[in-house]
Length: 156
Image (cartoon, rainbow, N blue to C red):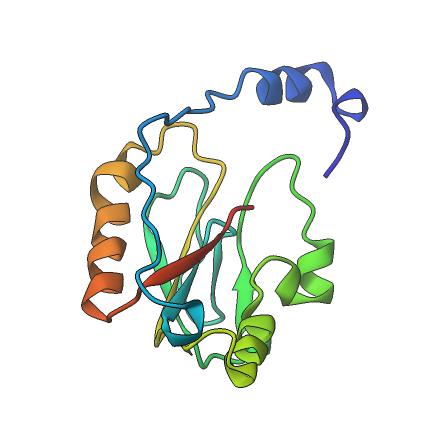
């Protein structure tokens, strides 16, 4: 990620004027059982998807399903943003999408189980109305139907 002072005036102003939302009404929900007994899903805004899936485009508010069993080598990133550096992700997917670390935690008994499906959205949306009203609630329903009790959200 570049420093603001390294960006052009236009790019710097674009970042400084990005319409960031504040949500003071986000509900807090305690986990109803120990994490060691819970099913966990991974949801990201890193614009990740399987190699054969349609790439994300700028402003895309759809999502992609990534099987939790997918090999890291089959997951690619089509996230687009002027200040986004993919180098760390390309070196180690776990920087953005810690699937190997989660599998290790399941093996150690720290997490009960992983969901069968993970979900990925495209970040850097100036107006995420469709995610808030449609695709986000759709993914939430899918997670609940699968019995997911906790989600690790990795924003990018």
